[in-house]
Image (cartoon, rainbow, N blue to C red):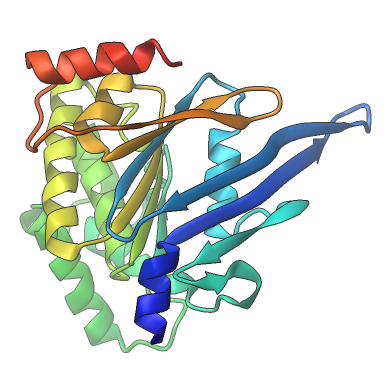
Length: 257
């Protein structure tokens, strides 16, 4: 079996027996995650949902390589995280847009390419392509203070996409937006996912957002964080949060949380 087949069989992301502790101010260990097992198929969109403090963001940080678990393994595209080297194929979009105020939209997107040896002209061309992908090519020279909240989120999304990732991790990226802008960002994200065929894992507190976006929802319970249940969202896209089928699925999902 070739490497691509192995990766496809294993899933894009496998979380195997992951547990995590943090130290408290008193010096005693606090268990945040307990024996998490999860497999996410390539090109799937998976939402992680649950009450505050259940370890959703910690799990996302472990998948991204930002945090190391005390127990368990993460396998990315068939490769154990300890041996994984292609971290540029994984992008992380945070809850805050984290744009640098002294840089234009173009230079903010370009920033994530500057750590490597890519020539300046290629960096700029790729950044412009990423802005075009999110519909902001005409705002390349605008500074963050000149952009609306939704436009800033689009720039942050473009920055996450400019490296052409296979896996996109998102930690409540649209939670600060108004309902109309959030719905527009949902449409943009789904359009881009269909175009780029990425695997997307996102954390949210918004049940309707999970139903509108995800193929599968992982429901976590707290203290320590563990997977309580999973739900498959068997609805055709596009989905509208106001439609009866979507609302019914959201109601069913709320009963599991």
